[in-house]
Length: 312
Image 1 (cartoon, rainbow, N blue to C red):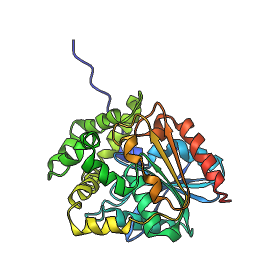
Image 2: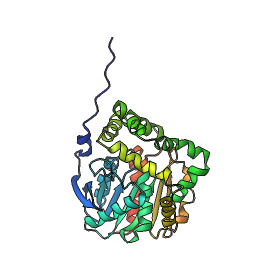
Image 3: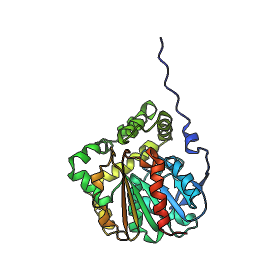
Image 4: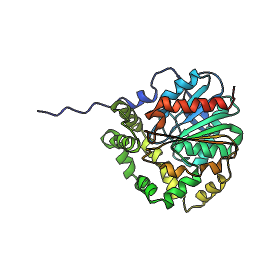
């Protein structure tokens, strides 16, 4: 008896332009074209995804934030989804400049910026380098950049969880591994890092399809390459110096207690880098993707915190 073929992935271009209670458009910032999804009216809340995601990771929050009275924008970061896949620019200082430029392009002076994973690292960097562009930040599953570096270099368990970063340093091979068998490795990352039964098959297929957008695998790996290769280099030292002072905006830190990528203990001490108020919430029963694994619980943390900022 012939085995059934696995279900076919959706078309990559269809998933990055998925329909819903939001609008798609392309905008220019920092000499780059960015694909954004937006909904609602009110103070701007800008959402930054991590790896191996794209704007769609915030689909639950887009509707919830719009209903709560916010203008919510989820962007495809440089190198992902429908945004430009440039040959360079995957260091956090450039990515923070992208976000600051996007805020201005949207006609706003500043925004609350929420970032997940590597997007959280960009949010911390943005608040440090472009304080005039930021009202507050929320970092999901990512400590302050200085602590992330310390955790990888000093904590054997965190180093074990991050061993994929070393594999990503090789040329060409990681790109092939990330896309072969219809990006099956993307699904394994999602399952390994989550703390629950997430993701279901359909969700995993969406992320696998998005990784097959031409050049996305290479561009997404370039940030990881910079993170490791910069450690002994001048640009790495310059970045660490640039973000060494506490940020001058309120910070919300959300972390899943079952995070399989970034230990909850790696976040400890982030409050020292928040000079204008720090709120930390560790969510039980979820892992690296709390906003997707438990969207209602996550929104129940995020929206009251946003409302407490009296942005309206």
